[in-house]
Image (cartoon, rainbow over the protein chains, first blue to last red):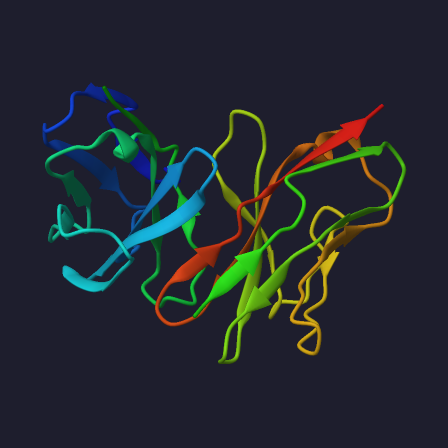
Length: 113
Length: 107
């Protein structure tokens, strides 16, 4: 069974640019979660999507947004990039309840110069 | 507010010695707690969750509501246990992680 996949693996952008990260969940999973893992800050919850709807978002500014498609894949968009957005962005998927086990992807490493 | 604290960023023990990774939490509701592990060059994965009360790879964790702790323990460390360990709390519609403890098992 294929795990959660994310693309791209690495990304380099400059301040002020916009970026889109992609995530494909495990087959049968309807929930997708996004986390930011910045150096020294641990994993911070960003967004939770289930059945195409945003269910919850973490304490991040509105320039962090996303969506979930009918096939349950998801995109994370970050506008007006700032240096502190440099981080590993992790996607996870689960069966649909927030209490279900989350399975993580390998992450996308974003560097903002 | 939900908060998870792992007081040790780094922990180093010898092979065969007991291991305890500390986790304390703050949450007003009924918590559900997890330990996740990330081995070198692998993705983050669930190690165990308190409701299942399982022992995975020899690790156990007991929820102590009085001390608001969920420490991870193993009686005899093995070299393959070297990894990054994260404690996580499932609260109000989100999973909150601690900052992680890097465990190194010395031969």
